[in-house]
Image (cartoon, rainbow, N blue to C red):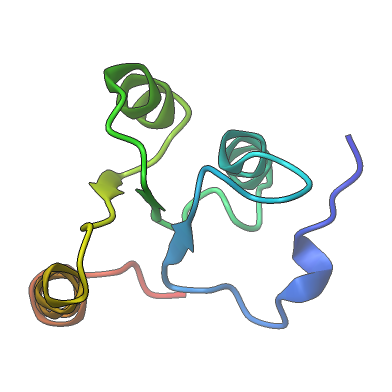
Length: 98
């Protein structure tokens, strides 16, 4: 498989927010490529999608996602979710030093 991801990053990202439904490839395909890449496999990947399917949650975790978030249906819910997201990933969680 040809690596299409690494040239996008000059430095490795601290976190990747990934949707399942994308135009050319599914988020699951991209997740597998990320986790198969030695330069990116350590990066936490959060699936952020409209899916409520248990099968998608299971598949995402099995492929190496560290979290699965279903997008809220309304703007207020989205604001609350991102406030919580920012608190957790910005203040609570720790990332490995690069």
